[in-house]
Image (cartoon, rainbow, N blue to C red; front, top):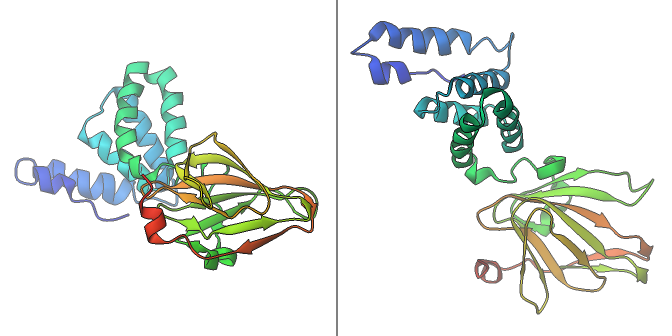
Length: 244
């Protein structure tokens, strides 16, 4: 854990011993005992204690940001505060949520939504602008292939076409963040959690994240005869940047 200096910065002259205990003992020794308890778990316990005591000041904001840095996802934090509401009081939870929304604002959907973020999508990276992540949900040798795809802000796949002699196509189930879907020659459609897009065969299209949001969807490959995908040119900056 990085060396803490908040105590000395704020109280080094007024209360040097308190500052020393805060920086060197609490954060320097107790928080650093990762072999006994992980930083993530210590963050969860600290957030829980502060919410329970109604101490929702600047220090709570710091510990929310610290929890985020220590790996507590937006989804996990929302569940923690919801659980605490029943034990620490509804007003305390409401106040905590207001700060949590601010801390996690830029990371909506970053955790991959409902199914998690998966691994870097290296196999298809050449067909994407920006970074994407893939988490297979089914085995294509056994059943219909389904995978959760997560796009970083501004990431989108190239224009492409799902082809088939019969059947085929793709279904997108949007699970996290905000994104876009566009068919060639048509206006782009905004995507939110819960949006379902049925993509027909032989239609040129693309999908991806909004400029300022992570985005995840489950992609379902519809069964068909002679199915394949044709990858085309990237979505240009000019085509993408006009979307708002």
